Length: 161
Image (cartoon, rainbow, N blue to C red; front, side, top):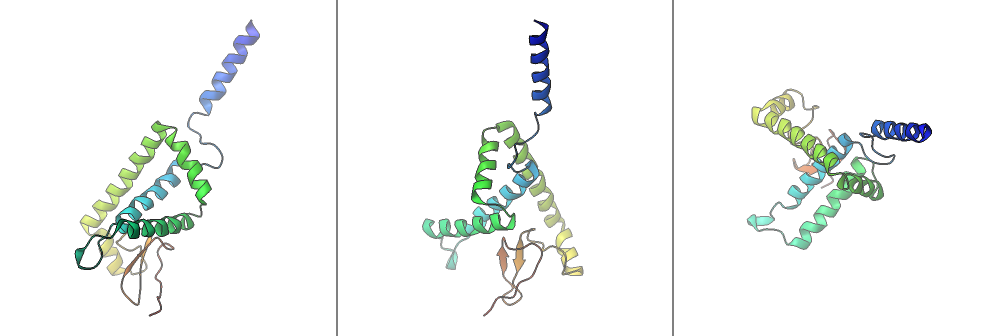
């Protein structure tokens, strides 16, 4: 009888010690937060209207989203399978997913406040090597002075004309 009780106590102790850990191959909360923030931004970028303020057709928007998602996964050095495994894990653990979304909200709010205060723009004007005031994962083309989302962080690119 004592052996059964000891075994149950031991299993209970081990199970409680693993409560906040994620399985191997699953992104941490911080990594998942960063990927999901970028994916939410991709949805916004893909919804930008076309010429003359006309909304883009849904098929064009979906193609843009696919391209952006591919770039995001490359940026974070992930495969679709790795992301899907992590997303499925967090989706099956709503309490952890809520924590990820709360973390996302905190990061976006802090970035929004920095933009509204002009802090990022002032830093960029004083030192063009600092992150751009448009977010962490965007570039400005030197040739066209255009924002290019989801390419290597904090670098300028030269596009061929």
